[in-house]
Length: 243
Image (cartoon, rainbow, N blue to C red):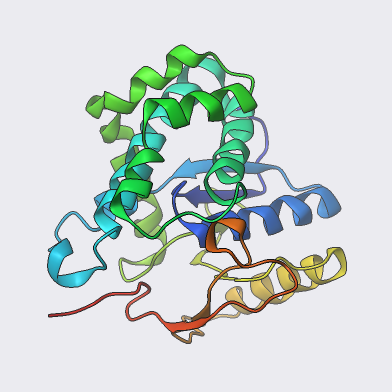
């Protein structure tokens, strides 16, 4: 167990916007001395009712399943090694998934990110035993991932995506986002935090949204920090292709 928590952050390891927002939150946390608790939300479980062939690009199902497999490992790490180890693992996931160079937009590339060989490298980076990769196949751990996914949606409603943040848990406000495609500077980071939390705390506030998103400034997308990613229209929070 961890002590006092200032912020809860629900993440799916294969969501690039989760990763960028988590990097920003880590920066804010260091500036504001915020204690962050990492919790699980699975895009695969969130979309369990969805016909992937009809609703998503071809590689999405493989990516969402890979994310769930990684969360199984995360659940075991937290259970056996504690929240500090999960903190290291969450960061290692992001660095290996998104910061190592361009990743092809294919199902095979997504499947590899949920493989034992891939996770072995992640665990080594996090300073954790390689044997933990056995949890990739442990579907019994989906129960805790589902419970925490449901927990997040109970706080925000179901028409949301990832990440989800809660301030002042367990009773504080929660919201989806912010969804960002660029990493704020140190000066911008605190300002963005203040604006985000201030807006979310306004009584009766529900939503501020646009569906146009830049491809994130991440190596996996081939977009460097001095480039602006291609703008795409994300319907319902994803690049869905309705039939």
